[in-house]
Length: 198
Image 1: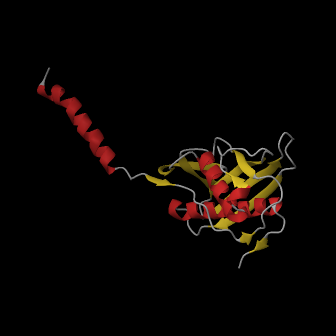
Image 2: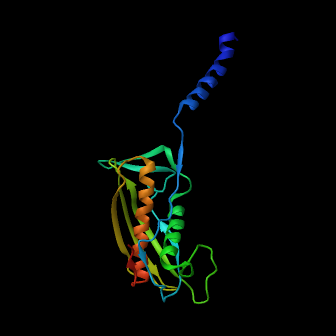
């Protein structure tokens, strides 16, 4: 075997490593709870728990999904979620609802169930993504499910908020804000006496 042939694998390895070193860095993002924009009296009904968040596999990806128009979507290789998106939404919605309704009124997943049972909140997210101009769309249905009874009538919420930029660092906080508004709507359904904050 010639010296050039013996060196070829090493050269290939160096080139691969140098290529990795020049690739853009990966950034990780997470959704966050947002302060309540309404104040709600403690609901008289049973406590609630966010039991399920369903969403299409096209959105529930590790890379952040954006829309470029014409039905074309892009899944980013550099901007990624720190944890599965459906689980993040469930955690954030639980925290949001606790801010609005009180800790005693909203159980976290896995909390002990009181003797009287709990009402479940089922959320289906159809869209949660930004377009090329930075407009974030959240489209979701939610329904309250009493213990041992069928789900109530689902309510649809569609929100469009402007992030001002399609960059992930601008878009993700606006996604969190949209989920805060969804929590306002759910809290108002559970406790109709909610009043808007200043």
